[in-house]
Image (cartoon, rainbow, N blue to C red; front, side, top):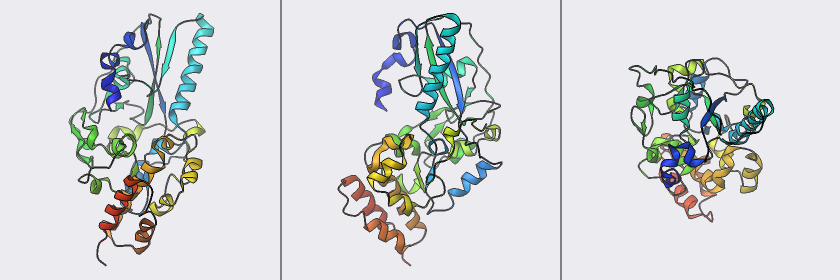
Length: 310
């Protein structure tokens, strides 16, 4: 993620990123779908035991959070201006080199968990973060203490061992990075470890004890879209580029593009074939063997090579 390094100390010095900044207002927005049932963590973990089911990270099954949170932060800034008069500000939500978790930790929203995500005693980690940089000298809120203790569940469960130690993640091994941010071929040694995760990975959050307190969103925006939960790999692999764009309109998934979508699913299909040979899966893969993209072709060839003898 070179864009973070390219901005240097602006990440840690808000006034250099937005001149005139005196304070930062931080906010969280819960994203579990409204229909989430008790025991949702176990339900999500069970998906990983069904090799032919496509698993999309919970946060990405609804509307693109960037748009939702940015609009709500803008509305908050408008309300503040209506109360105190015009002031200088800029809204951020995962849209610039901002150290969001550090700001959230210092402002009392939560503490940085061992998986590096922000944790809240009454909301777990299933929430988005956003900020308003303002030119107002606001009273400071106190940071909260850490409450991970000796627990290492998130470190232990990471499929690719990307969490190299408490509060340290090697993004190059992280499935979320590989399936979303990484544009090239997925490293061969990591492909078998990805299982059926085709967009993001929630494992470290699913095993976190604090997420039994995760809050349901009050917004319909994060309700699950049809096709992004419980679908088979074959169903999603069959999407044409036009269908992919239509199905992911307004979704965070759209930005990875159809090529990476097929790349990710091909890896998952190869992993399913490692578990059990399946002629239907093989036929679906062979249908993309001559895809115009060399990335897709290579991952399809790898997937077909994983087939176990009957």
